[in-house]
Image 1 (cartoon, rainbow, N blue to C red):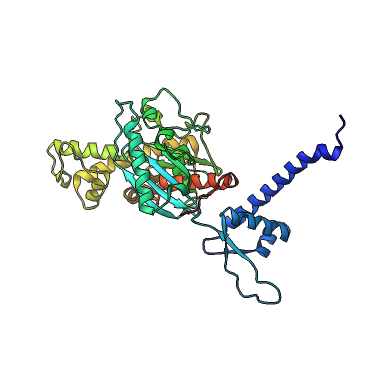
Image 2: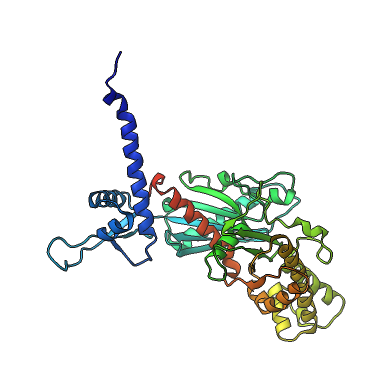
Length: 412
């Protein structure tokens, strides 16, 4: 049976038309998304920015209004003859993303709107037991953290679009964790269990140091298109590496993993600032040394890294010795990274960053004495929120790239 050429071509033509319409919708939504919160774009401005026709711009904007991605501001008085210009803006609170810092010694989370403005915070106490492979306690803690975040922000769960879990383990580009390391396996997230009952939520996992690097990229400290790394220095060292503006994952997500420190003289392990500050302070008190760090100590309660740095700032001799040892350890770690990767800047991130800020210049000088490629050393102003900020940014990036496949749920 012979089919007329025009009829055979119809499906392809329809497909081409749909692809063009989606391409135009993505272009217009991205253009509106780039406008600062509180600002609008007129149809004429969208035409100028996109080079699309007026009919196309207005038709796409009507579709985006129907789907709730954008809002139309009330008409303003016309400055000349004709109809008032139509003004469009992103519907900032049309949906929310959740960023989770699923750490080794605690879980924190935030919810942010489509602009990245944080609307709710939550968390849950949790300490990983490396001898217990049961994921249920970690799953329950993650659920509590998310629930408290939604409650704090008064957010309808139906409006959550994507969740990003930052974990202290390597994550490949396919979202998988290498096998064979018990610590990494314990730090995994059973997303199906955590998000049970919320089937429309999208989710993914990413290495926490990589998220920290993404957060710092636009924090004003570094060149976003340059080469730098963020060194998380709280419980365990981990690095997020940006080379010429691109995040380095490695073939299995191992870029920035620092177990090689087991082999570095004067370091010996990936343990970072917090556990060593606690251990060294406890050892000093147990040895009978006089220090303000002994106040409030018990078998279960040890001085925090922040307490050690505060005591050193006040002139406590024991605390000053500990801080000097920590600075020496940090400088050795950074020297190895500088020799291998030659970054412009090393940013120290995590909750200890405000304390480390006072030592940044001293550490930089120590690194310069041992490295042929000494980087600038700074402490991140994002402090303990650095992983959360990166998780929100990564989740929003996913939402923007897949917006036209996402169905928004209007708040009741």
